[in-house]
Length: 494
Image (cartoon, rainbow, N blue to C red; front, side):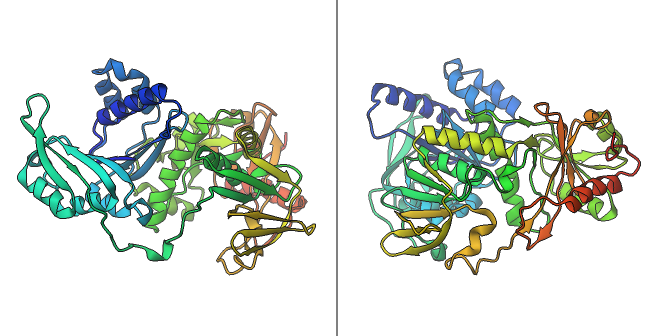
């Protein structure tokens, strides 16, 4: 694991990635198989400027092109980029490093093998070089970790020494006469910032996942990639029989102006999901056609005004007026709204099934028709099924939807089930014009070219777990569409 105090054009990262590739080619049996790079950048380049800068190093083009293809929008916080089929992980933190290092939880303590410090002189970036940063570097550095920086400023050397590094001057590069290098020769101890989250890692790297939906499928792939042995138990006879069985689910970020944690999480999670879905080597119906959330009444208009005040980049969300919606979405709504240009729809049922098939080809063991009745733990987790059989596992992950609170260990969780039904309707001449996903007091998707159908929905019944078809919900989905857009013909039969 390598950490860096200023990403800039990514040159350090690209050269390290190039060296990592060459090492793996020369030593295919080496223990080192993955590279994790963490970098901080307060003033990120635009995608265009990044590509322009990379033209100066054509020898790095094979790596630079992959980075450019996944370059995130300028949203503060952490952006995780999975590169080289997941062998290289780049955690790009956008914002002030002295603030962001406090966001790295205790599991990151003493994990960094090498630190690359900003190449600019402290005089050009004085706010970064602080005792707080030096202390954070020492907290994250494992014993034996190294660091290097082009600067040879005395206060930098002294600050790093006070933090715990052994520092020395060495010959610089190019026109630089001197530079600083250092090593963490001690094993430092730091009090846990959040001791209530402390947990012992699993030594066996073996886990069971309970559930057969999209969360189970993608978690299986992630654990397998990290070398875990994974077994999945699904109560149903096939995957995606619950909420993941939707044929067209809208994908866009949930924006909140009231909760800072949600505001940080969802835009980053949305952009990560888009990158992940585009990289998965599986086929599933989808269309990144954009999502438009409409201000169809006074309350929804106020909510959209609050979301627009968050100041997100236009690539994530921007205002859109009624005329532009009509021109771009293809249907007259009479409403202004907020548009998510990178959003769209996907088929969760197909994605789940395809991801699980991929995971099985990589070593996942799947057991359908296995309903878990109870869990108990001694030295291992005992998983008991409804037929009386049992299985033992080192770790257990619950991803079983509204059944998550059925166990003694989870019955006090502050969660509740929500029942809902979507409706699949055939395309009409008017509906076929739709080019965006529309969200109102429900949602409407463009037609899926694979089956000529649209999806409208969804009903919402808090506390309900009934999975049977409801004709009343079917009519309510249709009526809600008509009520929101009485001037349009989108809800009419024809």
